[in-house]
Image (cartoon, one colour):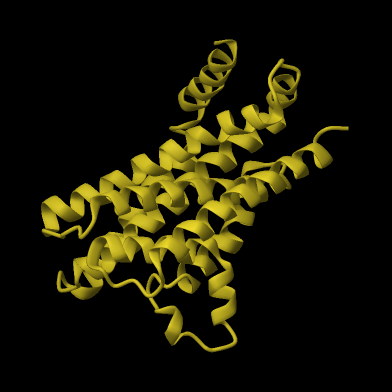
Length: 244
């Protein structure tokens, strides 16, 4: 019971203090809708929503989770709140889980908005709802852990956001969102398959239109395995860089 109370207190504090910070609003909420509006204006309402749907959802999850965690981790490191949490009688794994859960929930919430808009206003269809939900959750988890892995090295919010942009923007063009991985130059394709987000995009494409190029079982295994690997190395880096 005390473990759950500690987990809930850390999570609720983050939700209260950081969800409406300007970086979260600009990158996590406004940016995906600006991207949707750009596509609408460029195509003059003639674009295929089923092709744009996975991209909008992925961008919402990716930018929502990474923006949220960058703010949370760097603010608390700067104010030394994180050091005080390290003194609490809870394990490092539980502490990091509590810190990342808020970003994961924020990413899932972000994805729900474009999903509803695409279905209600653009009459988009979903081929498989359980797979779509599982894909969104896994994308939120892997994006959050990627942000955690990067944010450990940052001391300021703008540094964390800058570091995040170094992998966020290349990632959305290499993971098959707008250009199929098979259409990329041969020497770039291995890099695309290294990125875990590529497998999340494949899951979303399958769940929405059935246009996946990989096995869904393989996508799930790679994403789950990547989550464990990133979680392990993130905790290792925190212990090595933050705990003297």
